[in-house]
Image 1 (cartoon, protein in one colour):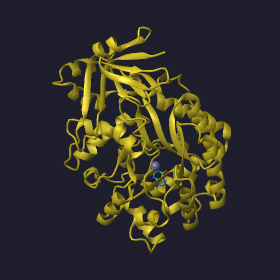
Image 2 (tube, rainbow, N blue to C red):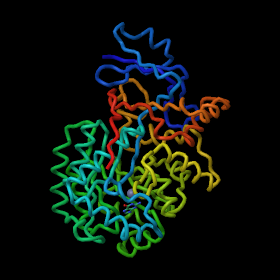
Image 3 (cartoon, rainbow, N blue to C red):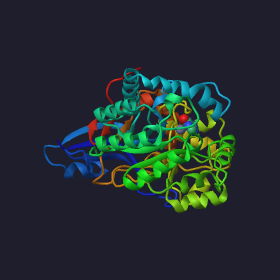
Image 4 (tube, helix red, strand yellow):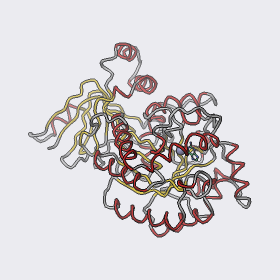
Length: 434
Ligand code: GUN
Ligand code: ZN
């Protein structure tokens, strides 16, 4: 049945880093969705209501906000139970806390329980698209894809690849990695909401042979994604340059094996060299900024302006388990603070871009998601703070709807996500805890 959802609509018509007027907020707005879960139109509620067919159902969310589904562009499935581990930086945290936690995913029943809990938790907090490092164990990663398929989460994921560094059971040799990737690409390739991502963990955990295999696989199956980490900490960068002494810089390691380009997503990139930024921009690869992770591990302050100046497509991720929560909306508040520490102040529109339209562009999914443009999938969520007397009063004191959105970026909580729709279907589901 065709439906119209009423509320305050907020989304980006285009890139606010280039167009200052890109943010559109419609106070008594309506989003018209057809029976296939596609957006037909959006706009003033009165105008849309006059255009609807007589049998259309009206769902009125009152003063709540309707926002495009959030994109969490970087998190780790097998780190679900290692959030907030005491640490003294990336490399020792991986060795002492992360690798032992990831070993537990050998148990397929445990992995399936976590997959359900994680997917449900993401959807309940407005995340309709996630890009994830899967488990090293294929059965566990399949459980993740199955949970996403059942509940309607749009998922880009793959088994985490490593063949040096870390305990033996977490390692996969290049031939096995090829076979697993091929099987999963074939199994999920027909589902428009699921995509496979080659996932070499980072340069330090991969042999040249494993990286070469990823490059060859990409040439054979150009539709697959590739995700990895880069330039996260100075200690890591020094170790990478020791391990790959011929490389010009960290990016060059990936470039040499043909891993860069559209559909490549590099997490962090906090400490890039000047020549590296130019090469990155030329390659067409995207970067995912993970604010709360960068603060928790003490990795550094992300140079947002340099990325924008170079035209690098950007997204934001929680990076669970280095990130401390599962709600990517909250990352916008952390992102603001990290930029303030560097004298910058991204606008509300620019922050929203990083988890909606900009993220969609960074993932080559802008024809499908990111805003309310007619024809796109009706992936959206409803933020309702009506039951919160303080927030209600605080919002009444704002000068504009844009100011209200800024306050909501800092003060809204995940339990204020009232409903979530993926391709027009309600999908928040019940809480599954694991
Ligand atoms: N670099 C390599 N592996 C990881 C990981 O699991 N988390 C983070 N934050 N950085 C990494
Ligand atoms: Zn990560």
